[in-house]
Amino acid sequence: MILVFCVIPAFAQTDFSKVEIKPSRVSGNVYLLEGAGGNIGVSVGPDGILIVDDQFAPLADKIKAALKGLGEGKLKFILNTHWHGDHTGGNVVFGPEAPIVAQTNVRKRLAKGSNVPNRIIKPAPKEGLPVITFDQAVSVHFNGEEIRAIHVPHGHTDGDAVIYFTGANVVHMGDQFFNGMFPFVDLDSGGDVTGYIKNVADVIAKVPADVKIIPGHGPLASIDDLKRFHRMLTETTGIVRKKMGEGKKVEQIKTEGLGAEWKPWGAGFVNSDRWIDTIYRSFSARSNAPK
View: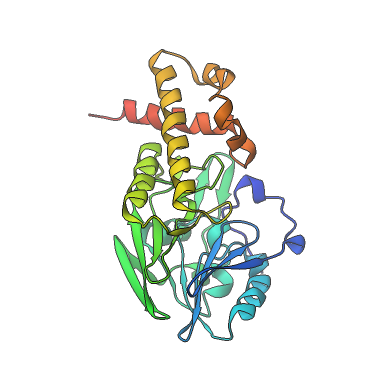
């Protein structure tokens, strides 16, 4: 039996039989697989294959076929950037083939499941759980480079990791980056808008100008794309916070909107109203927190 865990609403009704997995070379040994759900990063070389995230279980055979087209080596490692099912749903299929590596909170949330408004997520089976976990960072020395997973706290969730392919000069940011669209910040899983913005700024400060960036969702990106994303985060958050300071309620802020420049960013599965809700809720929780 194939289970799909934590399906983001936009993918809940996806006809997986019609999904095509599209491979493209990023740099060095690193490739990108696009399909339905989170983007998959792939390292292919003499040591075999390493993947970052694995989308949904019903797509596993298509993902395997795409990987075989990139190289004949065996799958050796699976890295999860966070726990959501559009990035970890394939764990249940790939887990028996290779060890799953993730931040400590990813295993905890997958093992526990979740019951929040409009979402009941069953615990993942043993085969879908990470078997190697880390708190702050871990490195896999593979295919001639150090592949470094670094935990970024309380951003998209409380268990996010950014993956640095240090030789290929590629970064996979998971859902710390939605290229060209408003992000989903999972406040019910330890996410935080302020932390999210800080994590993006930290990546910008660390990476070279010519880095290639795999976002969790959206097309392959450059540092300029990431900087534009960061500007969107800071400016839209600033708009909402200013209106909150004026005593405006969330529905009034939605009616007034975020301005013409950012309107196209609401065309993804997080529209403008939902992004305003997220900002409002995140900063309301901060203002009500015990000092």
